[in-house]
Image (cartoon, protein in one colour):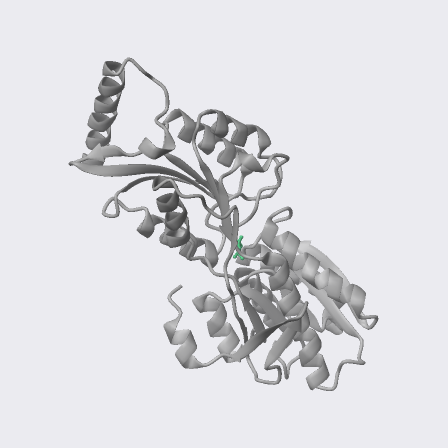
Amino acid sequence: MKKRILALVMTALMVLSLAACGSNTKQTSNDTASTKGGKDVITVGFSQVGAESDWRTANTESMKSTFSEANGYELIFDDAQQKQENQIAAIRNFIQQEVDYIVLAPVTETGWDTVLKEAKDAGIPVIIVDRMVDVSDDSLYTAWVGSNFELEGKKSAAWLDAYLKAAGKDKDEVNIVDIQGTIGASAQIGRTKGLEDAVAAHSNWKLLSKTSGEFTQAKGQEVMESMLKQFGDKIDVVYCENDNEAFGAIDAIEAAGYKVGLDGDMIVMSFDCTKAGLTDTLSGKISQNTECNPLHGPRVEEIIKSLESGQTVDKKKYVDEVIFSFDDSVKSLSIDGTDYPVTKLTQEILDKRAY
Ligand code: GYE
């Protein structure tokens, strides 16, 4: 409430000062900050996808703790509940409020041209975080930071290939199901592609089914239940495109009377490496987990700070990520000429995981 009154006073002051200047145009990027108690305050409108997963919760937390009042920001946070139309409405609202920066974590890649053009016309820099946007004109956003999702998919598929070789099972028929993420999201597109390319390269690998689990535990469980009904113990590998889907899939597999794990009936693979995901990796329920780092708050802040000081920023920036597995039968992977270590998960590593 106090904050609201302060915000109203601030808005009134801003209106008065703009009127006094006889101008209602947006401030330039070098003069974006308003003042609060003698301090510069940068207003950031953040359109978040939703709260579908543990990864997302950690990402929201990272953004909120970075763009705090104490750090000199006013964060306007909007949870779009996994709906693009809500994100578009949020961005329009940020434009109306004349925020200094718009940060967008887009639910899907396409469909952003119009609203991003509106932001550009209003002179508000847009920073894309996590998933990508697919726009016809790259100048519609200032910078992007996130993960290389296709590389993540390739790492997982390469681990499966190396594991099967180490176990002497590389000539066996391997039946795989893919519980995909939200269709059209970069994380889904890249992870699915990594698997599909590997399936195409192995004549004995079969992709029995691919269905979206919307990156949620509930949908992951539902999808797994129907895959089990259709294929039963024919399934050898369950490729889950995030940890929460893996939790749901494991529940469904165990409820159907099967055992998960390298020595069980089905191998469950996952992405994210959240604390809960790594807990299941340490116990062996998830056999392999490819990291996806959600702590983007400081990375976005670095971009904003550079822009504030008039520096140019990288248009695209990828985050480095590691690979964890339950056992140590695979120690490293070679992908497109680069070696990636595979780390056998330990309790110490798990204890250090903050999210
Ligand atoms: O893997 C998943 C989340 O876009 C990288 O979205 C993100 C994905 C993440 O819901 O857990």
